[in-house]
Length: 189
Image (tube, rainbow, N blue to C red):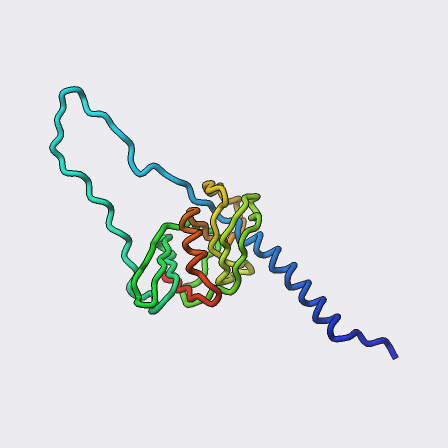
C-alpha cells in the first residue's frame, strides 16, 4: 500500500503554487502605461506696449460623474473617458482623475477590490506602488497602480497583454487610501 500524503502537505503545496501564480500575474498586469505630468499652460509674452483687458480664464469644469455608475461608496472607472472617480457613501464624487489603461480592459460591470499590493516591479521594469486588483480578463489580472517615480507610460510592445491601469502619483495614493478590500468598483463605458 503506497504512503499517503498528509493533507497539510497538499494545502501547503497549493498555497505556495497560488502565491507564485499571483506574483507572476501581478507583474504581467502592471505592464501598462505610466502617467506623465504635462504643463497646464505656457507663458507667452505680449509685444511691448500691448495692453490686455481680457478677463482671467475660468478653471476647467470638473468631469461629471457618469449617470449610470452605481450607487453608494465606490470607485467608478469610465473606459471611454479614461477617468476614475472616488465616490462617497452619499453618492458624491470626492476626487476624479485621468488614467492610462493597459491593452486589456475590464468589461463594464461591478467588481470589488480583491487584493492590495503595496509595491512591486512591473513587467515593464518600472517600480510601481498602490496596486489594487479588481478584475481579470483574457488571462490578465486588471489593477490600478502608479509608477513610484511618476514616469510616463512607455509605448506598449506589439501584441503585449497588459492589465495595469496607471494613475498619477498623488492620485494613486488617494486611490490606495480609498480602495480598501471589498471596495466596489463600477466599470462603465
